[in-house]
Image (cartoon, rainbow, N blue to C red; front, side):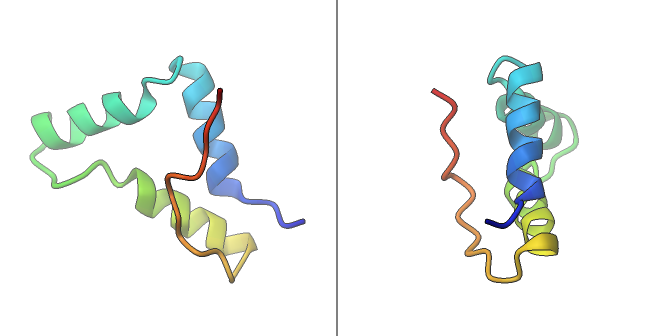
Length: 65
């Protein structure tokens, strides 16, 4: 079993923000700074590929409940 750092970080962020982390990050990045996305998926993919070179990049796989 390979450790996926990006997935672990996403779970941690979701626990700390009570599941609102993606919405908060999107609001800040898109509405306040004018970016196209918050970069959450790219961050997760990059971190997961540090420890698992064969990570497929499916960023929406995690479900907490």
